[in-house]
Length: 311
Image 1 (cartoon, rainbow, N blue to C red):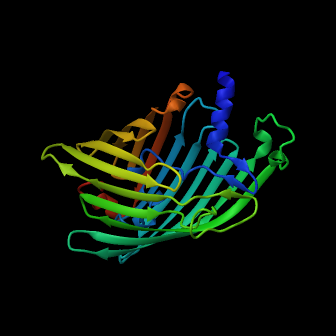
Image 2: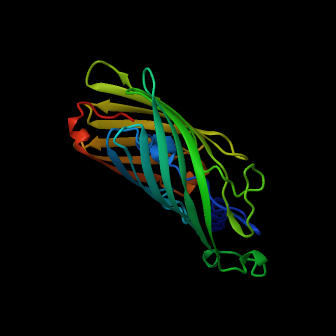
Image 3: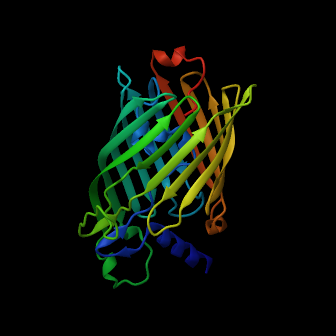
């Protein structure tokens, strides 16, 4: 009976397999989102004074068969006059029988304001989906849903966002994929036998609190919304010790408690790790989620910095 429950949960995560559409998973997200804003918001491109590259790998719900496994690489930089930022994101996300690979480029225009900068961004690209039905475990051999061994789609999309930032505060609003391949949403594109992509909305904010000593606090908030699902939020509190070591924790509603640590090896290289303690029903089948992040910054401006960029 335990094995049966496990297969049922896997199928629920993968989605409802009903022609003519296949439901894809939610927009992938990471516990260390605060160290890689470009994946959530295209307006983040060029918000630093140098070229910044980040790689994140996540193994979700370790020990749970068919659980998500995600990798993302991103890079962004300002142009010489610093009013324009460019960025690129490549990601791969596998859950159950479905594999999604994304390729997106970002453009952002930065407007100087009295105490900070307001950035407006656009992104464009495509997602390649492939689902291998032959890898499914099912009992109804005559169900027409499984007559096709595989299904693949290339789905173009674009996103938009706004991002305000200063040295010690940021706030953003973004929709990474505006086009939906879902008949229940506006701006919907109908394609026969396609993976279902649902629009997601993100609100982010954070602030640096200087205690006057070697310790700084960085509380942050992430709110996620998509139709037909509860609003989910991450409440995070990180501590920065001597401008070198980050450590903290996140509460993710209806999902997990996360422990985070990051080490600034030098002015260019940083390495981080996050462990999710699952609080949902999946905890009965999983030992938690693991995530690593490696960031590297390029350019002469990095060496000239006296204090690190907090966002």
